[in-house]
Image 1 (cartoon, rainbow, N blue to C red):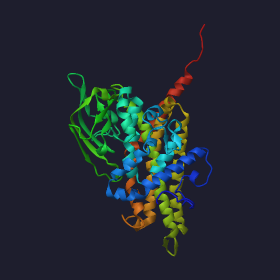
Image 2 (cartoon, helix red, strand yellow):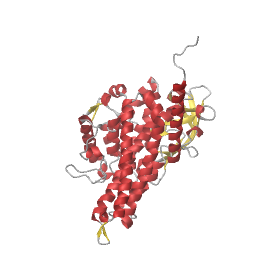
Image 3 (cartoon, helix red, strand yellow):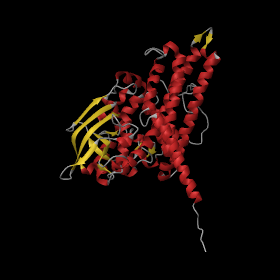
Image 4 (cartoon, rainbow, N blue to C red):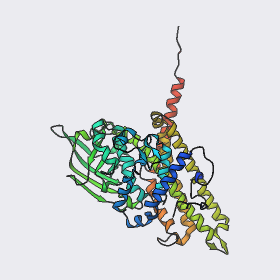
Amino acid sequence: MAGTTPTGAVPIPFSEPPYLCGLPSPYYTPELRKWQQACRAFISEHLTPYAMEWEKEETVPDHLFKTFTQHHMLIPSLPAPLPAKQLKAAGIHNLLGVVKVEDFTYFHNLIYTDEMSASGLAGPGGSLTTGMAFGVPCVIKYGNQQLQERFLPDAFHGKTRFCIAITEPDAGSDVANIKTTAVKSADGKKYIVNGTKKWITNGIWSDYASMAVRTGGEGAAGLSLLVVPLKNHPGVEMRRLKVQGQISAGTTYIELDDVEVPVENLIGQEGQGMKYIMQNFNHERLTIAIGTSRSCRVALSSAFAYCLKREAFGKTLMEQPVVRHRLAKAGALLEAQWAWVEQFVYMMCNLPKAAADVELGGLTAGAKANGGIVLKECADCAMLLFGGNGYTRTGQGEIAERMWREVNGQRIPGGSEDVMLDLMIRQLAKNFQRKTKELERPRGSSRL
C-alpha cells in the first residue's frame, strides 16, 4: 500500500514522518499517537487501498462520502479549534471515540490530513474533504446565527454538500478582479447572481457554494461572500473539467444566469468578502502543504524501494553514487519541508487567532508554494530513477508516472506558486515595517 507502512514492518526511508519511524518528537503526545492509529485504521480500510483505482476511473463511488460522514470523518478537515458548540448541537461530541470535539487541535488536523493523503493522490481524498474543509468554514466563522442554524447541521452530517467558489476564468490568484455579480432585486429580498466560476473542486456534487461575488464597485472593497444554491437550482449549469491530476476530486465549471439567492444567505457583511477569503486561505494553504508532503513521501519512498532491487551495470541502482545523491537531495528537501509544516502547526496551536492571521499568513503562503517545489523535485527524482518504467502508465513504475501528474495540482490551486512566494515576502516586509514603527514610537514620554 503506497505511502503507509504495514504494522510491524520497517518503514522504507522517507515513507513516513520521523515520529512514525521510532524517532523522538516534542509534538506527538500519546493522545495524538492514538488519534493517528485510529485515523490510519479507518482510512486504510475505506480509502487508501482503492485510491489509485478510483483516480483511474476519474471518480469515487457514492457510498464513500456516506461512509465518511456517517462516522463524522470529514469533520477533522475543518480548521482548529472545531466549532464545538455547533457540533454538539448537531449531536457530534467526539471523533472515532478518540478525541472530544472541544479537544481537537491543529495537530489532530495535521495527522488526519497526512493520513487522508496516504496514497499520494490528492483526488480521492479531496473528493470528500474539500467542500467541508474550505467551504463550510466561511459559514462557521463569518455567518450569523440564522445562517449557521440553516446550513451547518445538514453539512456536518453530510446531508448537504458545500464547495468554495472563488476562482473564475479570468480571476484566479487575482481575487480582487472577480467579475461575478450579485445585485439586489427591486424589492431588496434577493440577490440576482450572474457570472462564471471555474476550477471549483467538488462543485459538481455540491448543493451549495460559499461563493465570492461582487456586490459593490471595482476592487477588493466590492467583494462579498454568499451561500449560493447549486444543484438543480434554476439558472445554474455545471459540468466537470478534466484536469491533469486530481481528476476524481470533481473539478467543475459553473455558469450562473440570473440565479436568485435570498439576502439572508449573505455571509457576514457586504464588502468584507476579500478579508474573509484571505483568512480562509490560510487553512487551505496549510492543508495543501501537509498533503503535498505526503505525496512527496510516496514518490520518493517508491523510488528508494525500486533502487534497492533494480540492477544496472552489474549492480543495484542504490550502489550507484549518482543515484544516492539524487535521493539525498530530494529527501533533504522533503524532511526540511515537513519540519517547517510541523512548526507552523505548533504556532497555530499556540498563537491567538488574531496574531496568527497577521504573523503566519505570508509564511503559510510560502509553505504552500515550497511544498509544490519540493514535490516537483521528488516526482522528478522518482521519474528519472524509475526510468522507462516511470514513463509508463502501468506496471511497477505506475506510481512515479502518476505522482508526476500530481505536481501541478499542488503548485497552482490555492494560489499559484509565484503569487504565493511574492505574498510571503510582501507580508514579511509589511510586518517588519509595522513592528519597526511601533518600536520607534515614543512610549510614556512627557515634555515639560
